[in-house]
Amino acid sequence: MTVYVRSLETAVPKTMLIQSEARDVFAAQPGLNRLGSRLVSTCFDSAAIDTRFTAIDELTNDFRADDPQFYDSDSGLLLDPSTKVRNDIFAREATKLFVEAARAALEGCPELDLLDITHLVTVSCTGFFNPGPDYKIVRELGLSPAVQRYHLGFMGCYAAFPALRAAKLFCEADPDAVVLVVCAELCSLHVRTSNDPDTIMGSALFADGAAAAVVTARPDAADKALLQLDHFETVLTPVGEDSMAWNIGDNGFEMVLGNYVPHIIDDHISGALQPLLAREPELAALPYTDIQHWGIHPGGRSILDKIQSRLGLTDRQLVPAREVLRNYGNMSSATVLFVLKHILEQEMEPGESTGGAGSGRICSMAFGPGLTVETALLTKLRQAPGGGKADHLLQPVAVEAPVA
Image 1 (cartoon, rainbow, N blue to C red):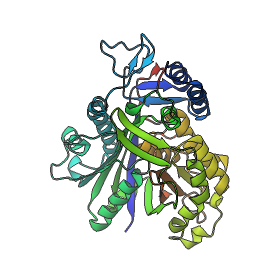
Image 2: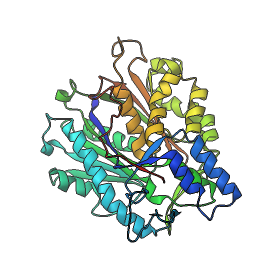
Image 3: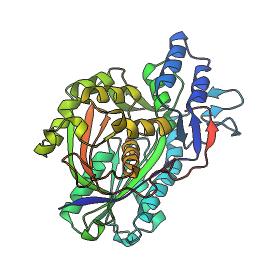
Image 4: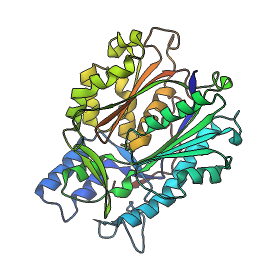
């Protein structure tokens, strides 16, 4: 049975962060030692990020709060709210992103009725509340109260693929199923000033965003579908458990992102791809560059550099990942869906859907705590609406801001 992605949409909050200005604010914090100051400059400048988005309005110099919780624009000080304060904001602001992205994905399928949605899968690792985002989406959008709801929590940057894999399984089990998958992350909620290298790196990389997809195997979806979901695989690298982690602290969630992570991925990425490509021996026999599209989660510039070098990919094949990193930073689980949307909005090349074994195919991967490598093999069926626009996201009201 063939399972399709019928629509794929993205959303970001309204507040834009300028990377160079964020660097200057972090570098000016009074608690930094000499090494911390050097690390701030190095991490922010080498991240290959120009802009990011945040759901925290007060992270702007123009915003004035009577009782600031994250950033005092008058003094220029970054503050350190409790985990409860951060999570309360998550419950309010993440709901907006979940609903916005979900609504856009459903509007991308005008032939479907809201009551056609049979399953809902939500994803986030940056906060918790209950009734959760799955409940909020059903209520806000008017979905059937009988929708089967599932939430994948605290998995990290790779979680979009387990969500899509679950959607595929639902559709294979029930040919009439229509599954709505929604990822939303507010990584900027957990920002803090520190001399710790992992915390500094997280502050330089992470941002907020959401993405949603409608997945179905209904035959009437084939003519309008964007993607075909072919295969998924999961691989745990033999090392890396202590190099990438995501823990809950008293003052927000704490990222462990060791500088050895790119080397671990470099050493094990070819092996991680083998089970996926073995699903189609004709494809496995090709050079990696013959697989037309590569949807790589941009965990950071150095990770993309290592993958490109190890697999021998062209600069063109890395454009979607590098452009998403440059414009939006690392939005955890939602990020790889931004990359796939970028690929879908590229114009179809002559013969793309009828060419050789690698033509029109997308090899996609994402990485997270463990170290876990999730991979997916997809087929691009047509160009997504909106392709060629400078900004393919739901349009935010961008406000320049100095901190991440």
